[in-house]
Image (cartoon, rainbow, N blue to C red):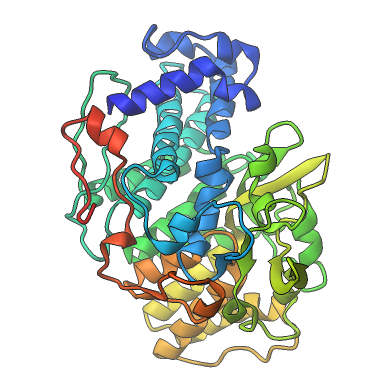
Length: 472
């Protein structure tokens, strides 16, 4: 874990927090120099620290690009143009990553960097107040979100092997610690505790915009957590609470494109519950997520035929994908992130949207055999996107397949498709493999070691108590 701490200190000294922190935060001594309670001494310094925590999520190999890209690329929604590309993410697409692969190393270190920033806030000895409780609740939610990503990428699913090695749980700052990997179940327990504690601390009346954690955002993430855990009763209860709050709405079919064209956080509850914001100053430049889809940028990531033809001709979501010319070839180009050249704002990375909560709720109903409410909930979304659709009337496994199909269509290009395969313990099967080019696997079996990433070599070198995943 020394490696993780060193990365954090280097980032602080180098000023990586500058994108969302003021000079006061940058002038603070590193955590190794002074106790946490001196670094964050009041509501003002805690607010500044929280802004720095949010900025850590923007990293290119975190929510800035790699996580949403890989969640579709390692499945069957997108592929890297085999003829004209920037050589990015080919390793991910072909499942040939190793323990020295830079993208994976960066995801690991950036997740722990964000966790360390959250820990600094959570452990600060500032007297409780409405503002302090709100900020601490936001930090608990972000810590849970980061651990959730780590356990997804670097460990077996809870539903497959809860006792297998997970990732190290680090809740306090100790530059000399060399923690071993906690089990998957232990990490899940910590995530659940953080999110439930956050819900209790966050003020339900605090309606910050969608670039900040709110109480409903924490509950939405908790519903997703229970979905991955396979706890369908809890997933349904929490998702239902978010829906019943009545604060979020879906864009109708005529307004969906306008919604995705908006680069700014929202306060009106339209679609977005929580997102990582990028603006004209705080962004990743040519490495923004949008640049990887937009033909005005790299444009390397293209939609598969299989996904495109899943949409009906009257489905508004199909309009977010367009046939364009790339190197003399007709390809399907994604327009879900259209603000590459917008000088006023850049596209956000959506962490969780209201549509996903409805899909979680529909699946929770279906999993416990409540077909009627599952159909009603699923059709609320499906018919909003396609007013000409008559609605689903299936039951049992057929209804579950319809829910997974709607998840694919609705959450495409947001990084969820791969995880639907993983949590269902199903093989990834790429129906449009001919588009991928030579040497790209058409399947990724459920039992493959490549289903999860290797622990980075740099971490193994720095911490003798860390063990590697099988097959690396």
